[in-house]
Image (tube, rainbow, N blue to C red; front, side):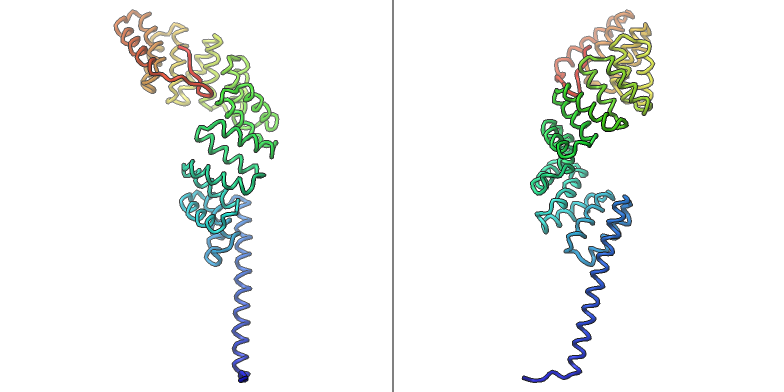
Length: 347
């Protein structure tokens, strides 16, 4: 066997030591970048997190931790198309990783691709059935798709896994309300408010559920609680005015409904109810103006035509009243029956 010269061995050893040092240095660099990125994510400081994970990806594109961090950073930074591209590639590389599928599903959801989001999140659920967050996020997709029964099932599971999630109880209440399970919805809204008395719109949703059952006094009390915390919410002001009108408190209803139209000049229902309140108080001219605005905002709604016909008749404008009656009858034939959160109105 030929003996290798000592000088050659020294050179080989030197090269090996250099490669080992560089590899160790690279490994240290990746771990440092990962730690920096994760620390920034925890602080919700997404720009430096993204920068750290992008640098790490350039060094180690096949590192699972790096791909997770990069996908989440892109998602949180609002770079949704890039998140979908990165996530799709990473899921193909690691198909058994629930976390990657979870983030990819959320990226699809933010892109408005609800079918892809649901499919991806369902795949993640199979890999991690005990994740309350996965069930919660899939429920959001189902709610956005108006699949209230499926959303309720996911939220029920999420709550079993994490009973303290007040928002999950609110959303489950909404799913029940839209499935005509109003009493169950009320229970969920009450639980949410017990868990977190400051939960956003908790009193509003409870008030809406009471109102849908005709329990207007209880609804008014809940709307007033919501407005004590958020007085400029036009929808809550409108619902309060609507309930006051339903209970015959016309003067106060008029005040709240006028404020609702000022807060949201596109709220057709507020103009409709305001027109009714003004007519009840004898303000026919103002009533006509409000009802005409309601017609402009939603021409396909028969109800304003009905009320407008009544006001015009009282003022002696018979011909225009007849026109409004005809429009009401024509539109009424085509009006779909509604339920749940979008409850129908009596004329």
